[in-house]
Image (cartoon, rainbow over all chains, first blue to last red):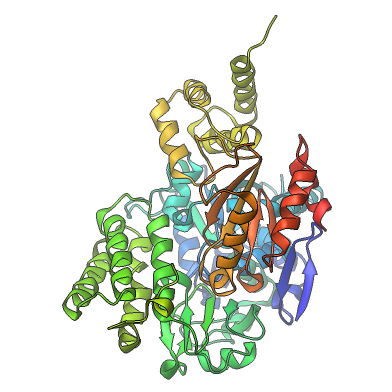
Length: 409
Length: 173
């Protein structure tokens, strides 16, 4: 494990060697400049890459849709609003491989015919901004941004940075666009999708930081290299942010399809009672299911892995996650706004040993309603952790008598 | 001619309007600048911004009240945000919370009477592998122990002044 500083005294941790550090700088962009737009998108499509933010939409399809849209103005947005609990890989990528992210954005801009890139950086990462601005300024000087990039006639592309202001829901792509436009970060109805009606009504592709960095790697090393790693349905490498009860927390790079047990061995988390995959909106996987794999066809994830040791109180964990959702729900739709509060109250009843099985079933039924009826991914996924903890640890959470160990507040 | 505080604020907002433009999409960047300099966005500031962007002041208020980093209420010169999300929670954020309250004499959500410190919770600040972590304005502190709280606060007190935020990190490294 190496620990480095980003020049302002802020520690960043990476573990081992990431592929991002081995790719020749700007080789992906140089290859892309020589290709037609269709060939660039073809390369990305052939790699089979799916979005690294967790939703797993095929990147090539998104580029194709945006490229086909007829509009003078198109936008490439880098979603650096990394707010999912337990996720910090984007912070590491931006601190150490910002060039690769900007290179990926430039390639995406060339492929879909955009002239403007926007990085939406979360307010909590303000300390990264001077570093990123410096990298952008250097790239402008090197003709990697600006007019006729690397001599390609007519290809103009530049990137600006916009700051978030502390709202988790703005990581949802339509909420992010609302925020860029100067509104409350409330998700929109879809369709229309951002690829045809995005920022200011123009076609917009919104990508996770990591997706853009891999895009640059694919153009550099070729689609076949990426496709040769991982599983059939989940190709390539993926970064994981590992925290919690393990010996070596940090950012790891693994092929897609790695099992949870293998991952725990690598990070020194053997003996864990459960692992939270995908952050607060993800699923809690108990030890008996550690043979399951981290891939879009099994357990999809944006890379957040939180390890829970044998001594952890699962109900306290559910309580922490639900407090998070009560705080971060945008309040626009009822299932999420009211549902998260009812679930939190339910967890408090369980903590105090005051919850009947009948009422617990009601809460589970409410959770299903939230999954079906909420407007965006936040509400739809907010009951996931609660449901999986109820499912796998029911005997631990029912009939509590010891208030001292049950709850923390 | 005597310039009142309101005139100065109006001029300042106009200047940001020149920088960011007068479209609706400039609203949040302008609000962020006002928040940074004045530690709040007053009713008056919201009205001036609304006039400049040609929108209703309620639209501005709606945005200010939505985002946790924007606030109508005056905040302290140093806003301390302690991460309360699961990884920092498991690494002992409760003890830091207790010590912050003890050393500042306020509870979460409050500002010290001298206007120096505001204490708030933050949701995951992306330092999960190095928790418990907190932010003081734009600066992040990781692997904080309760006994370090005093040093962090002293560092802030020493640099209290116009250029405080720029030199805070140097004070503490």
